Length: 116
Image (cartoon, rainbow, N blue to C red):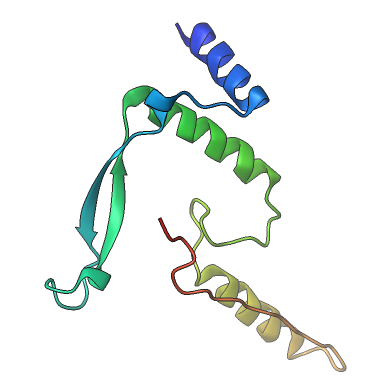
């Protein structure tokens, strides 16, 4: 069965076609743990996927993750918005003892970048 699923997923990714039955999910609101429970902005959507949809999602995530540069932190597994700040602080700390060394960075934060 895994060979059959792999062939199906590879064909879907090759042709950029996803069957309609794979495009549905049950969305439930999850409280972020901060703010008032009465305000909608304090919730985030969570998708409940069917088993085959979840397999496809994991397959695509792994392939896309392999294409991203190492400096991409948002929306990646085991990374967060805080990890680039930690790396930047490390570079500052290491450059203190080096005369004429320069450290620079550009950070972007787009609130609500993932709008569904």
